Image (cartoon, rainbow, N blue to C red; front, side, top):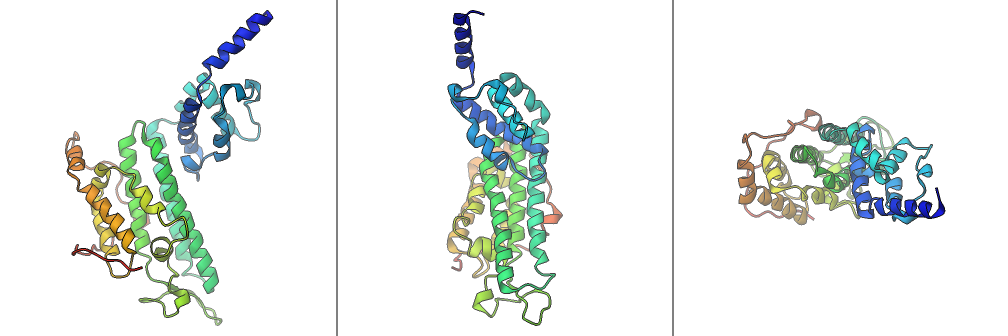
Length: 320
């Protein structure tokens, strides 16, 4: 091939290369597809370092013979799918939208269940106040990270199965919040004499142990930067999806309604979710469905049995 022909071929390849926006769109969907085969990481957590560096301008991309990274199969598939049209057409066949939605929900439940199991283990063995404080903070941080991922992964719902996936994701998220609301009683740390930790009745007598509960660590006194993650995730859902799970909203609201349980801002934002569920446009959208039957998953007993809802009263105030 002559030199002018070589130059023309190279120019054509650059012009035909996917745009930066297209590469980013592909990367997001490929995270959803490939993370189906990952037992732990949710799409927005999957291969972050590779995704952060993958959206380069066409002229700045490495030649195709450097796209294979022998240290990571997933990273290689991400690169090939983002930059090569043939691979992009092939990779979605690894996991259809229904399989991706199922894997996503299973992973959410597995992550939440592991966190709650770890928290309950604090009741089974002696722990000092510092150990409890650090352990509860770690569990709360992990739960908040799952809610962060739920928030960020809303972008992956623009696919087939999107409506069912949204409804199922919301149910798991609300079941998790319901379970958090069941852990309001502080855990009493062990004394020097040892013995298992236990939940106190009412508030702990010591100021230093009053906040040793999962509910306090996530709702009442969250760590900096984590307080808004839970509600921020829930606020992304449509009124129609919230409407489908109005039973859980009422149950959780009853628990939050108890004096001193939740800060006023948390209660007000949760009330706004219920108002969104009651919005007429959301109700109309739901009634327009073909069957009028609730879609999605049933309640998962591993995330805790529902507690009795408190009858709704007048305007509420929360503790600080």
